[in-house]
Structure formats: structure tokens, C-alpha cells
Length: 89
Length: 398
Ligand code: SF4
Ligand code: SF4
Image 1: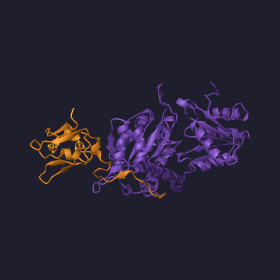
Image 2 (image 1 turned 90 degrees about the vertical axis):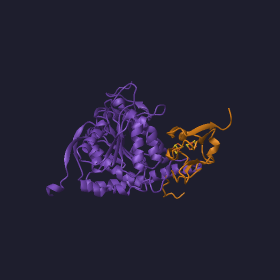
Image 3 (image 1 turned 45 degrees about the vertical axis):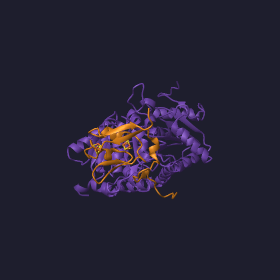
């Protein structure tokens, strides 16, 4: 470590900067495209930046890094996202 | 000197002296939450902003925790930021206090010391402010309204130095300084503008063109390196603070010393070490004792983090007795200053007997006569060198 250098606790946003976060997940968001209005709110709010907006304007979730927090489900104004249990009851 | 270039002198309370410094420093964002005895600082700032004497964003937060969180956000975006609090407000803010230091944000805050309840009490002691001592904040302590003004301006320059980049706290005693009025000489706007760095030079952490996250999960070794980086900046700050105070001294023609103000200490056999408002009473006591031929002096701590190690060691080597007056207590250990000073003495093989008096808690009176009584107790061998001699006003040892 250069003793003169000041370290800032900052990081560039990148998918998977906290490792393979899919392992944290036990419920999984599923998007019902027929209900989706392409508003983009889920894309804005996803804390892992794992939602991408496709060229046709619809959101698509990268399940490698989706951690299952359910924020997208909460913010979707038209209830187009549902959290489903991945491991059965 | 023509009229335009004369400095203004005003009769100000310690709190209003801080408000004027904040105004002259062209602070951009001031997140606030009221608490006695701090409130009049931000009231005055809000007056300035409402009267268009100052252009700043005042954020009325819903708690001290939110106020510091807003300060963090604003500072991360490159704004010059000030906030202030006391006692329970400081404790409520405490999580964000550490956040500000760990994120390397050059926030300046005023801490008007007040004891912590219960029982309820609005008078001064220093335990609230001293909770910052491990956090990475640089800690100044003023003992007059003029010094509050001067230190607040110096604080911005120290905090924003790219080799320091740490938040700076400026403390002063509740009521004794915060609400006492005294003449304060203000610097002129051009002088402050020339003294302080251009706020646009503050390196913002946040930048919309290059998005980043602050505080994401690093590997543990990196995390430890962040701490070491703060440590190194704090060590560098010791010299830089002296440079800033020197420059300010030439500008203002006021001399308080640097990390420590000494008063008749050079040839003293017994040296009091104090901090804050009650140092004034110590000066009177030193003068009275000296009239009777007693070789006694005073050292007032002005900067407690980084700790003025070499100054203290030098004083320890001059004196035959060191008497530390702690307006605080670390429960189960002793007076905080006395304990820290003793541990520094140990590092440097200073064996001068060091007496730690705990007094003035909860705003209790500490008068010049009390210092004289304490001096007598030490010289007459009534007390042992210890860091927890509980002394009440009037010489009472309960
Ligand atoms: S569940 Fe959470 S992590 Fe997964 S896509 Fe929704 S917001 Fe993103
Ligand atoms: S928030 Fe809901 S409606 Fe909006 S884009 Fe996402 S899924 Fe579609």
C-alpha cells in the first residue's frame, strides 16, 4: 500500500461484485410479460443491477446474480412480477 | 486602512461565531436538527439563508441520524457541508459519524458539549464529544467564541486537504461558550475566500458520468487497508493542522499555539492540562499562584485527534508534576485525557507523577479557587498519582 495514497471505499458498479448472489435466493422473481407496461421501475430499483432492458423495451432478469430480494416485485406498479418459491414448499 | 478593508467586530455568542464562520466559508449544504445547546447555530444560519445573505441549501432533517446521512450524501457529491449537534443528538447521529469518516468525507461539524442523561441535564461536560475519539474524525476543541470562529474556518481547510480528507469536529462547551457573548473579530469575505480552498476543488466521490457505489463489500484485507489509510491521513494531518494554524495566525494575528496552547508552562514545575471553557479559570489560578511565587503553568489541549503526542511528552519532561483536569470519565478506567496522557508518557519513558482529577461533570462549577485547591492537594501530598480523583466544586471529595 502506498502510504501517501488515500483509499476511498468505492467500487464501480458491476454485476456480481459481491460474488454469485443467486446463492442467496430462495424465492425467484418471475415477470409476466403480458402484464408489463415497460415502465422500467424494476430496472431502476434492482439493487444488484441484474435486470436488463431488452431492445423491445421489456425487462429481463439475469438469474445468475438476482439475489431474490423481491424489490422488483414490490415496485412494479401493475403487479407484473411475482416471487415464486424455487424449492417447493 | 480605509473603511472597506476594516474587519468587523461583533459581540457574538460562541454559537453565532460558528454561524458567521459557516456563512463566510460559503458552505453549500447544511442539514440540521435542533438540540439544546446547539440550536442557535443553525437558527442563525437559517436567518442568513432566509435573508439572502447566504446561498445554501438548508435541509430540515427528521433526526440527527438523518442530518448526518444527508451531510454524507451532499459531501459525497462534492458540496461543502456543515452540521452541528450536542449530547443525545450526537449519540443518535453516531452510526453516521463513523460512516462519514470511513467514507473519507470532508464534513465539518460543530459539537456543543452537553452531558448525557439520565438524569436530564443540559449543561456541559465532554463525554459526548469524546465518543468520537476512535472514529477517524479530526477533533478540535475551542475555549472562546473567537476561537470557535477561527477553528471552524480552519476545519474546512484541514478537512478538504487532498492528503487528509477526513471530517473535522469543532467542539466547545455548552452555555459557557455557546451562549456567552464576547467580542469576535470576523475575517473579511475576501480574506476567507483567499484562505480556504475553492469548494469546487473538493473531489466528489459521486459523479453521474462515472457511477460508483460507496461502501460495497470488499475482501477483509482491503477493508483493513481502508483503516490503515485513515490512520496515515490522521498522522499526516498533525503537521498539516500546524501549517493551517500558522497561516491563519499570520492572517488573523491571533496566537493560540497549535495543537496545544501553553500558558506560563516553559519554566513550570507543575503543569495543569485542561481542555475547553474551564481552561480560562485555570489561567486565572496560574496567575494567582504565580503571584505567590509558585512555579505553575497550563497547557490547554486544542486538538485531541490527532493527539498532540510530542507536545505532551515535552511538557511531561519539563514538569515535576502533571495535573490533568478531565471534564469526562471513562467508566471503569478513569479520566480519558489523564489515561491517554499517561499511556503516552509510558511510551516515551516520562515518569513525571501525573494526577488525574475528574471534575466539572454535568456542568458543575470549576473556579480558579478550585484549581488552587487542587494544586495544594497535589503539592501537599494529599492525593496519590491516579487518574480518577473525583473533585467537586469547593474542594469536596465526596
Ligand atoms: S429479486 Fe431483487 S435482485 Fe432479483 S431482480 Fe428483483 S430486485 Fe433484482
Ligand atoms: S416494473 Fe413491472 S411494469 Fe414496470 S417494467 Fe418492470 S415488470 Fe414491467
